[in-house]
Amino acid sequence: MEPFVFFGGKGGVGKTTVSCAYGLKCARDGHRTLVVSTDPAHSVTDVFDQPFGDSPRPVEGVDRLEAMQIDPEDEVTRHLDEIRQDLSEQVSASMVNEINRQLEMAHGTPGAYESALFDRFIEVMRNADDYDRVVFDTAPSGSTLRLLGLPDLLEDWIDRLMYKRRTSIDLFEKAAVGNNEPRRVMEGDPVLARLEERKSFFEFAGSALHDDAAFFLVLNPDELSVNETRRSIADIREKDLAVRGLVANKLTPSPDPDENGRGARYLRERVATEEERLETIRSEFEPPLVAEIGWRSSEVKGDLLDDVAAELDIATAVEPPTHV
Ligand SMILES: Nc1ncnc2c1ncn2[C@@H]1O[C@H](COP(=O)(O)OP(=O)(O)OP(=O)(O)O)[C@@H](O)[C@H]1O
Ligand SMILES: [Mg+2]
Image (cartoon, rainbow, N blue to C red; front, side, top):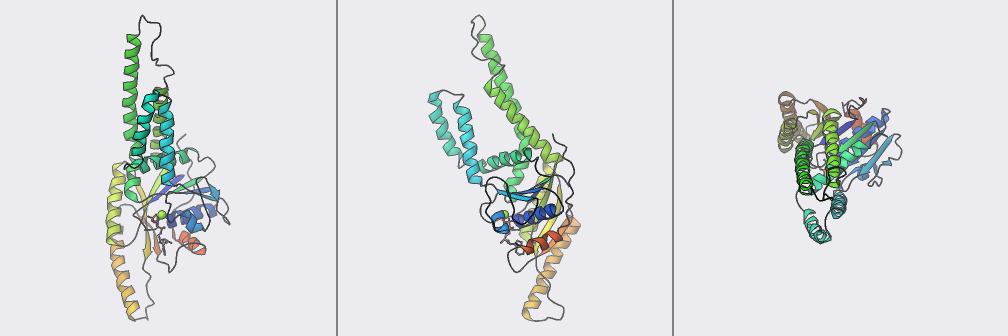
């Protein structure tokens, strides 16, 4: 299995639970593991009953397992502050107010969360030397999936920006001939340097996502979730990435065969309906079902998490990364 493993899926299907269970499994199998969650509501903190923050902290009672919780809101603020800092070094004082106004507005725009989170994910991947495996518990699928297509798009975009910047510097240099002080010089240009840095960031992101990451989708046996999964598989394929496997969670438990009360009949019908949906998944969906996890009567934490971990048929052994 690749060093980076992502679990995606619709809201509430069990991404956080499955990410933590898989992280636990990896750690128990001897791999130094980090679980990264981006969900401020129900998250690693609830599952492990222990506070987590912005940087990795050991999970109590489990060797080799650490977790961190990224708050998207803080991430956007930090991201915009960095941009503000960057820009104010490069523009005139009169522009700074305008930039501040624009950035305030950018805070609430669609995509701000995604782009800040994307940067943070890649940053975590770039600094993952202390771990054999990093497990990403991603936000509900749509937005996260869009992120995966970003590196290619942005690399092209940056190429164009760099071309424009070079052309503009070139023009200035030509215009300054005869005048001993060219106003802009290609060498050491801060804008070009920054663009170059972003470009290598996206190159890393592209190769890490393509070569060193595996994607799993968590689903529940209801029609909405199954349909959404079908779409997500197609979306991911469109980005030249593949879904490695599907985790079916919250399956209704079967009643004992000798029980025939109303509750038992209801459960039996539900089990039959869910079995049909699972059959559809097995026969029509390309990625294999790698786990069928029963619906427990309480939240999955503590010993229950070990039980769920045992039900995941997902390898934990780590292939060495190919990205450098
Ligand atoms: N197999 C299960 N049996 C019982 N409860 C479960 C099971 N799987 C998940 N849950 C519970 O369902 C709730 C949602 O699960 P979880 O938080 O893992 O989903 P999620 O996909 O991460 O949700 P979100 O989209 O909000 O981040 C939690 O309270 C969790 O404990
Ligand atoms: Mg979650």
